[in-house]
Amino acid sequence: MPARPRTVLSLALAAAAALTLGCGSLPLPDPDPAPAPTRDTRPSAEPSGGVDGTMTVEEFQDDAGSAIDTAAEYWAAVFADSGLEFRPVSRIVPYLREGEVSCGGEPMPANNAAYCPDGDLIAYDADWAVAAFRQVGDAFLYYLIGHEYAHAIQDRLNVTHRYTIDHELQADCMAGAYLGDVVRAGRLRVDDGDLDELRTGLVAVADDPDQPWFAPGSHGTAQQRSQAFFNGYEDSLTACDLTD
Ligand SMILES: [Zn+2]
Image 1 (spheres, protein in one colour):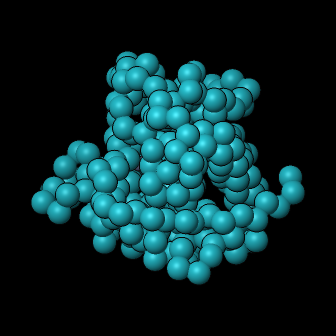
Image 2: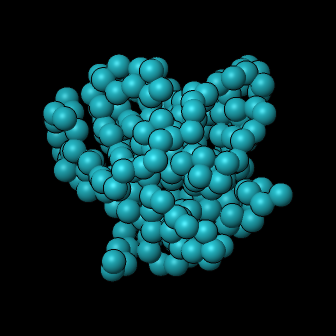
């Protein structure tokens, strides 16, 4: 597939909106044997809100497809380098209503995204993702897909953690490694100032400062998430404690 340099980051995060990534917190069984990989980035209906003049749903879907393809190619190469067989995530499932997609019997909530081992799929609230895309820029989409894809990789490598926060921060690190490596490889382009803007975006997906780190749903403070992401971004997967 040809290289596709593009502006990754164009953040204009005015306020720290309550963007949460609740992914990976559902204790689920191992996935069933995966069917042939498919990709469906088209929501079952056009997300509400229409086109605001800065970002179209079509652009969103195009970038979602690009982010997914880029992540799959990245991890395929990493696995090949390690002599491991790679199996891409089976399905990408946008949804429009809470409960429209379930994961292991649990309804997928609005305003979130998750990797679901039961079915080996990444699901996301399409309205929420488009809104975040418009607010934060396409960097958020690459980060979002990178983070959820990292959960799929953790699952494939049978990586587990005692505390949710360690699993989530490792996924942030892996998302950073993925983005940093594809930028270094010239597959994506980051413009001046974009990294500072991404740092601002990571604040938006951080836990409240008073949330206990050991709580089942904890993902990390803004500082923790930023540090994990940029450790991976700068030092690649060696920063992510995948091989100890
Ligand atoms: Zn997660």
